[in-house]
Image 1 (tube, protein in one colour):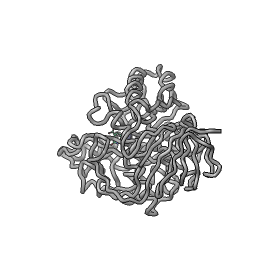
Image 2: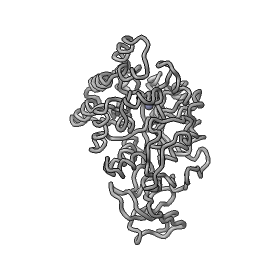
Image 3: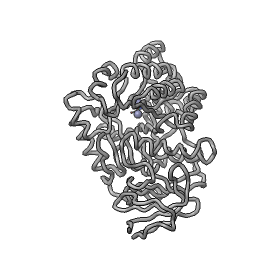
Image 4: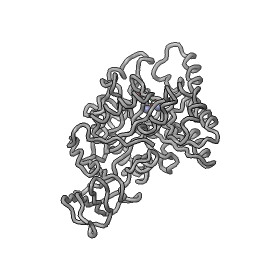
Length: 429
Ligand code: NCD
Ligand code: ZN
Ligand code: ZN
């Protein structure tokens, strides 16, 4: 056998770092072996000291905007941010302007993403306006995203979406409306009171109850409390294809950040107490959540600095800093190395993509990371159009140096080496 490319060095394989040679042929991992047994190759790369290789990361919850919100992010800047963060597959949410909730809109997005993306991508569809389109939508979308405003349609929607991946944003709208009505002119610090964790717990209960005994692939995204994670786990134990994810911001930051950063730290669901974030972090440590997602939700800095509570859009970018932050947490002993699976192998499995691990048969997506050198997170350098982050000033000790996507060098030292449109659509479920 002869491969196109062999990369040799310390590699993350089966949850451990081992000395290995990864051979890639025709864009796919052909073998993983000890360096001595590696096949000959047209090109050979030997990692330098302090460098390790990881599978391309997989982020199953991002907002790359475009359409009428291209000023916040577009598929080029969003996927350059992904590449810089070692992410080779993103799954993009449908809450666009205009919303992606029909076959026509989904095809439009496929066109835009297909012509601009630098990394591979999957697309969610919103609750479909015309249920008659579902079978066609399924051929394109990796799943459906259900927002609180769709809950009232949930019983019939879930009947129609059996066997599809259904991702739920869990916040009960009635609870939020009631809390909001209690405060006349809210300040940013009230965000957590207006969208309390009770809203999340109620939403999880309500959705699980409606789901009943249907055969579904339900996925609860960005869970923020131990209580809701436990509900998902116990439901999983009773059978049924249920999974969940959590973000690093809900695991590593608390509502204290809102006091310091104001609107920059406004996000849905809100940052919670330290007790809650500790619960989320320990769920990540022990693998009780199935995935880590960035919920990369870019807005312009000037929008985030507005004075009026209601005028500050929720969310912040995360794609380019998630992997470095995870690795820094690993290096500092706060989380085990295996949490990397939550940002690679596990979300790839949920999406049904042949990515996310250094295993023969998977796409040849390899990230070369340099460990050790300290750097400070500085959002003015972001590729994303959203030049802010609540992680500003954090010290990170890991830097993405190279990214191979399907065997092709796609990024070197922060610069893209592939043309727009190199990213491929990963088709539906
Ligand atoms: C997201 C956005 O801006 O699109 N905002 C957020 O605070 N997470 C929407 C969402 O994921 O709920
Ligand atoms: Zn959401
Ligand atoms: Zn989101």
